[in-house]
Image (cartoon, rainbow, N blue to C red):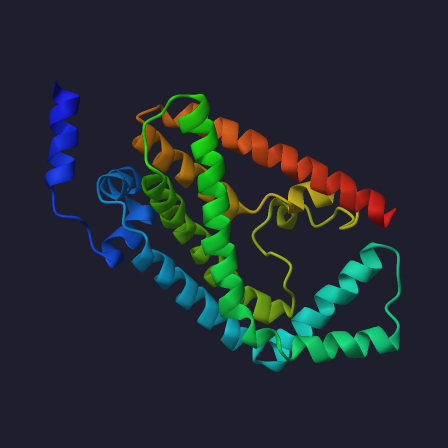
Amino acid sequence: MTDTITRASSSAAAPRGVAARTIGVLTSPRATYADVAAHPRWFGVLLLIVLVGGIAATVFMSTDVGQRAIVNQAIARAEASGRTMPDAQLQAVERVAAIFKYLAIPVQVVFFGVGGLVVAGIVMGVFTARLGGEASFRQVFAVVIHSGVVLALGGLFALPLDYARESLASPTTLAVFVPMLDENSFPARFLGAFDLFRVWWVISLAIGLGVLYRRRTAPIAWTLLGVYAVIALVYAAATALAGA
């Protein structure tokens, strides 16, 4: 009875604005996701994170430092796989780096928009189809999009550090805590796959799904983190073998 009254009150309450929901994902995720579940609006937040992230990346990639960072990343990947980049290929990479600034916003649209659809589809398949949860695709997609605020914040946090280091390698992975490891070793690659903002995103998404499907957050979070760990393990093994 109390749960029914609470849900009814949540549905009757005025929905939060874009700014309140964006900040709320970071500061009060459970209450914010309850609002999102009751009022599954997603376009405003998607537009905000795409434009903010895309414009910031465009500015970064328009600088000489940003373009050098793109080239440095290509060189590092070649060296990690045991190859030396020939001059002709290096010049081609430099030409491509010059147009990356035009791709920043489209990449954000694909990452958050298309990626959000994929994640929402997987969630619907697991929670609704297999576990019998009751939620519409619009609700799930809205929760996924709002969780993307954490990833967008991670991108903004990393850009100044990327500029200072002239590198696109993430400065917020667990690998930064073990600089003594060979960056091409399996342990370094495995730890490098764990980005702190992605872990935060997984936990935030788990909170949102727990609120939406009225399930405990901890089992969802541990399951998602376990999937993340398996993906990181496969990635580290594949890249280590490729560079061997």
